[in-house]
Image 1 (cartoon, rainbow, N blue to C red):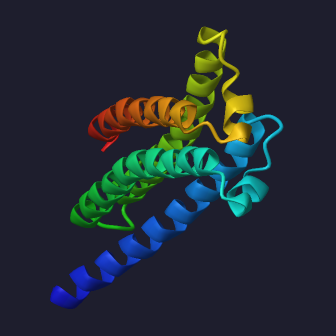
Image 2 (image 1 turned 180 degrees about the horizontal axis):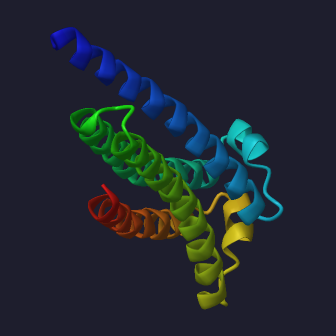
Length: 166
């Protein structure tokens, strides 16, 4: 029983690591699309702290949401094991748990994209992306706050999906 639980825990950890890396990669790629004419890698290499703050905020935001999905996946695997891993109910539960994790990633990235675009439209007197290029840390902190706040709210939604599906 202990070995079985350890094996299940290791599988869950490996799945979590894979999804985390994929989610962070997708988040960084989408950030590149959102930030218009900013080359994040070049700006980071130059030491642009403002861009570093935004990249860090995106990573933290995605981690918040993916963590909820991983928790749901763990709950799904536990429920599937109780029902019989290869039973119809067990397979459906595992499938729903993976769907919930993928939905969490999509929701996180989509919400960040939407939040930054809305912020850009609301603050007509400030060109956030231009200010980031200049290294404006105040604007970066404002944007980071929006990104993390949105992720925190989305995290609750992902937890709600878990409660409903699993």
